[in-house]
Image 1 (cartoon, rainbow, N blue to C red):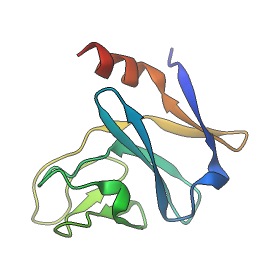
Image 2 (cartoon, rainbow, N blue to C red):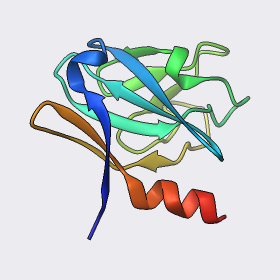
Image 3 (tube, helix red, strand yellow):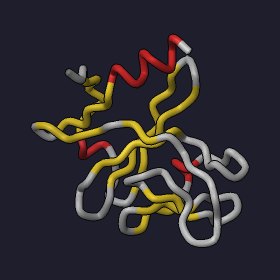
Image 4 (cartoon, rainbow, N blue to C red):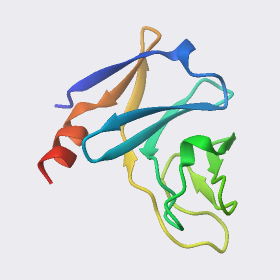
Length: 111
């Protein structure tokens, strides 16, 4: 059973925008698509660790602001000829609130 951490209202994240949650072991970027879907990834590009939260959200992808790598919000995988992956974190919206997988954050803290 997954425990969920309430991050805040969906409306606090602009459509095609991101919000960062800071943890002891790095940051998690929470993305909102134009269709109000929510995805979460560790906030570092697999290429040069650029902050994905500063990237451009388009469809279900984000483009890293440093070197234009395109990362799937669903899988964390680099798209096209680029190779690499960013870990994903389970996220959902319930009653207008964004929830993040608290167990993932605990596991990262224990590592």
